[in-house]
Amino acid sequence: MKRDDDGQSRDKASRGTSRTVESISDEGRRSFLQRALTHGVAAPIALTAFSSARAATPPAQSGRAGEVGVAGQNASTANRTGIIIRDFSDPYLELLRLLRDAAEIEHAFMLQYLYCAFSVKEQYQPLVGSGAASSKDILGVAVQEMHHLGAVNRLLVALGSSPHLARQDFPYEPDIYPFPFNLEPLSRSTAAKYAYAEGPAATFAANIQRSPEDEQFRRRVLSDIGALDRPNHVGSLYRNVLDLLSECSARPGFPLTPAEVEKWQSDLRAIMAEGEHDHFAFFRQVYEGRHPAFAKSGVYNVWNVEPDHEAYPSHPLPKNPTAYVGHPDQISSKEALGIAWLSNLHYWLSLCCLDFSYRHDDSKVRGLSTSQMMSALLPLAVELPRRGAGAPFDTLRMGYAVGSDKERNRRFILALAGEARTYAKSIEAQLPARYDQNNTKAIFELLGA
Image (cartoon, rainbow, N blue to C red; front, top):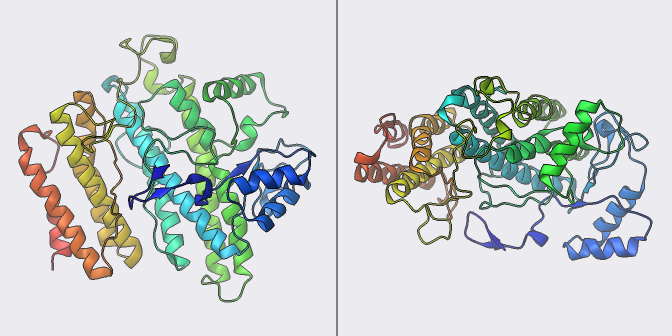
């Protein structure tokens, strides 16, 4: 059992996260239906999924909602990687469900990439980057994931839903991935996971002709990841979202015009392309030790040395640390724990500002979120590895829109900003020089009226 941001236990088997089913043999629909019902899938939808799984797969660009395709492939040339089981027959409900799943996954990837970036040793700084959106360094990719998270939330609001910035604790096990999500330092294993998750399905599918180099890469990544019982990728989710948008747009009363649907589909395809091309190429380069930042390491391949070797790219940070006192993974150093808790406060403040900005289409408050990230959270996250810890990015149990209306949420943000300011003063002697102690001033100026 996991706990979400509201502190409520959730059984993942019945939660409705995008589940996958392996390619189904002819053993019969009875056994498939039994398995589907075990995972909490309604019988009519399970039977529909069974029929879809046995049918020939059309090209991905014109595929049916609920199916995972390989771009540019059909059933005769591509190895099917599975299907995302559809929970709701109503396409609008299913669209909202998948978009909320997408928001959680984009959020989780953003945090994993940030944690990886802050674990990298100083001599490999070009691998980390400066924080500008880019597919050439880890921070840049994390910023692009933040943009993806923003796009998904804006679409949710456009569809009449609320934004979704909540997520599960780490380790987080999305049902469409063959590995759990963890906050962990950069390693060949983490680079393998991210290359797999971002990459096109065809890159890792079996029985496809590819160069010896690409085949070796495929085999090594799959070996590092392990068993593929849930073999999907980020693109699998977005392809279903694209299909559902088309399905919904034909229904009366849908809140988006045909032109808006077309614009959103274009934006989502751009997100998919950025992941399946740019992000994948970057993480493959890191996985294979070919990133330019490694050129001065003095070794042939940085992943061939032991983790305690000076040329190894990252610090040995703990996996899934937390600043919540009493948790088994609590940060042990008292000084590091104080900085980590302050980093949580700024992380939560940033998310609260994002939620407010999405709900009320307020670009100024969205700017406050970016300011919190750059002037407060970033310096703290860079400092923590020097003290043997990492930024925990803990979940805020009460959520990011506690108030019942706009005014009460404004007051909540101000209260949280006051909490961060007061706590920063209490540990002032421990703060890094780059930490801007006036970082909440703009929040009080804009929202304090």
